[in-house]
Image (cartoon, rainbow, N blue to C red; front, side, top):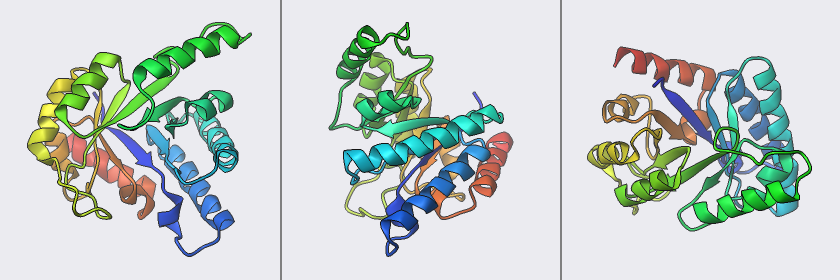
Amino acid sequence: MPLQLCYITDRRQLAASADEATRQGLLLRKIEEAAAAGVEWIQLREKDLSSRALEALAKQAVAIVRAARTAGSSTRLLLNSRLDVALALGADGVHLTSRGLTFTEVRRVLQQFHEMSLTGSPPTSSDFDISASCHTVEEVTSAAAAGASLVVFGPVFGKVDAPRILSAGLDQLHQAVTAAGSIPVFALGGVTLSNAASCLQAGATGIAGIRLFQQTDIAATAATLRAQFRSD
């Protein structure tokens, strides 16, 4: 399976001291940059925004990703936790955290959405993706059994902004990959250009990150990671 990349957004890290309009503008440009570079997944993870503000931002992000796909990109947009906003705006899927919606709840809402819709068939696993954050091998096993489209596993090397959280390490990452079976597993947490290759050697299908993409030129970062994968 080819290497896949997942850009997880955090506009506050882009410009912590800037006003909100500036931060959102910078974020949308990063999303456009990622889509143009062919980053396979973008997870819109702006957890502090109000529902109205998130919907307005997500609407613009959806438009950017759709335009990129028209131009040949394969990028898909996931909304963090907010299934309602994802469905309302036609996003490509939802990302589930360990403390939010369950797969069962998502499936039920998708069925209700179909029943209330006049457009025909409900979203399926092929056109509406469900990704999941996993921190243990057991969580990966559960996500795989529930039919996750992809799993984000970590923190593999720890979290810069939360040093007290223990890292899972490469052995746990390898076990997670085994537990996931055919479901793509993305390594997250402290992953850099210098240690990404070790995640790929442990079996990860993809690399996920916030700083890895936000603090660099995304096209150059993506090219470097893909080159490592080809030479691995």
